[in-house]
Image 1 (cartoon, one colour):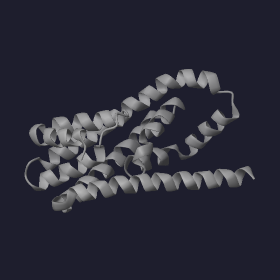
Image 2 (tube, rainbow, N blue to C red; image 1 turned 180 degrees about the horizontal axis):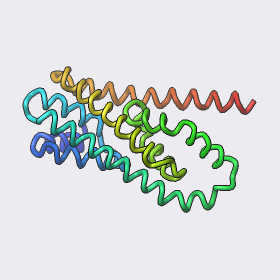
Image 3 (cartoon, rainbow, N blue to C red; image 1 turned 180 degrees about the vertical axis):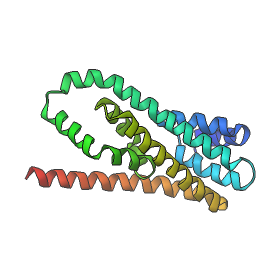
Image 4 (cartoon, rainbow, N blue to C red; image 1 turned 90 degrees about the vertical axis):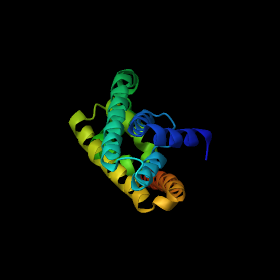
Length: 192
């Protein structure tokens, strides 16, 4: 494990929900921290009686939703500059239309299935002025699923949570790669 991972795990054991919430909030803002690993570890530590499962789950969902909300607002603020420059272009209009059509699913699925895409989706949602209430609903449900899914796996497989955490990270990367491949093939087929 890396030094930052070791530091976060030690801090999680010593300071519990404060470290969990801070880490998940910063990860949602784009700071490269092992958020999924920390959620899996939290489930394992909860089974061992080190952390309260209910408090940890609540803090995790609230922190992740708050971080996503802040990155949405960053997209909204940056979007004023971006859209003034590119708003008239066909590419921007197409992206805007596609996000309006599929945005809620993009937000929802990027919370727990395609997690590496969460920050770009948040920024896109904000910059295209995707409705806040729809964004927030998808984020809350998606983040709750993420915490229950990965925290639950840590709880169930507490003895081997490190290997499980690595598999979850690897799977997420593979899923994003497959998604990008499918989108690329679709775009190529449409172009022809």
